[in-house]
Structure formats: C-alpha cells, structure tokens
Image 1 (cartoon, rainbow, N blue to C red):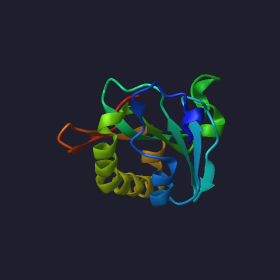
Image 2 (tube, rainbow, N blue to C red; image 1 turned 45 degrees about the vertical axis):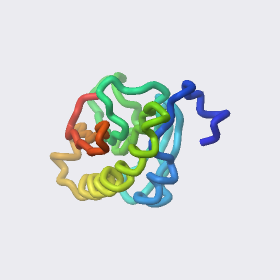
Image 3 (tube, rainbow, N blue to C red; image 1 turned 120 degrees about the vertical axis):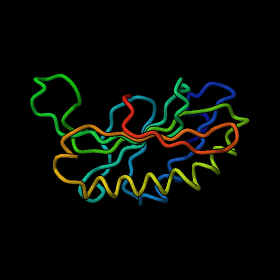
Image 4 (tube, one colour; image 1 turned 90 degrees about the vertical axis):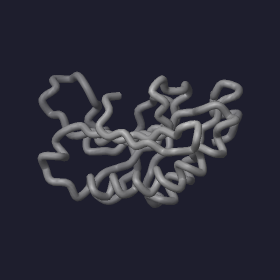
Length: 153
C-alpha cells in the first residue's frame, strides 16, 4: 500500500504487507484499510479479508485472524451477513524501528501458522464452525513470537 494512501501516523509501520499474506494463502485474499467492512474474495469454501489497523494495539498483537460464523438469530445486530463464514486477518502497526525484526519473525513463524490455522478451520467440524474463533501473534523485543488462541477482539 503506497505511503500516500495509508494514513498511518509518522514513525509507525506495518510489519507485513498484503503480498506477504497472499504468498502463504494464495491470491484469494482481499485487502482493505482500517476497520472498514469489505467482502473478501472467494478462496475455497470461505473468503479471506485482510485489514490494516491504523493504531497500535494495547495487547501488542501484530497479526490476528478471526473466523466469523453465520449468525442468523441476531435480529439485525452483530456481523453483517456478507461477512458470515469468512476469515478476517488484521495487521497492526508498530514503531518503524522494530519493523524489520518483527517482519522477519512473523514471516518465519506466524505466517505458516496462519495458513495452517485457516486450512484446519476450513476442514473443522460444524460445531467448531458455528462459534467465533481467533488467533493472534505478538513479537517480543527479543524477536520471539508468541501465539495467543481465541482472544476476544
């Protein structure tokens, strides 16, 4: 995403690009900005959307993925029906000085784990697919990658 279009605060950078993510998932991932709701492109049996946060996350999460199940009984509240049965990938910015180390760690450890999680979720039983699930990754100052499962967003 060109710098002129990204609306990111000076001194912050995203550790991954949409190209990094597409390289492990295939070309079916749809890029968007911020917290906007957009339709992911169809890939297999569930779509994948990529979104870039504009602000850093207090939790330190740099990469997150969430499964959004179908929710028919919500009477108009909650997730828009276009986003049912989709995966949403979120990339959070971090200080630019930490970008290179975080990028290397996320590409080596988190992106293969992200692809494996999505593949497993696509083949998960109906009971798993009926509930909302998420996984996120943080990178410590020492370059270690921590995976957090089913965190509330």
